[in-house]
Image (cartoon, rainbow, N blue to C red):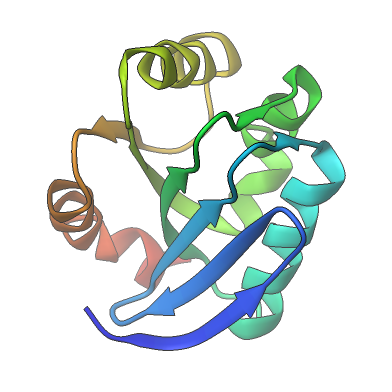
Length: 134
């Protein structure tokens, strides 16, 4: 998986990979705000000229999203930027937080949790048609 472009933001790095896949990594020791989620969306939109992306998310140590950030990340408006999400869960605590996001916030797009990046990327590749239709 080759990185085409890397955007460094305050809360995360956004790596543009081949095949419409974007990898966002939220940095260690951070409480992610709605504004930081929007900054990520803006970076994706700018780099992809408004085309949706397939998003793989990884999260650093002791990093979580505020309730408002989760709500924004899963809002209907966020579907302008993201066609599907693959969340790589690092440990049990992170899995619980990701479960809350999936079940409580109910994003309006396919979303799945994975134990590693390889499985996440394989699943995202199966959803390329969601980008082409966009």
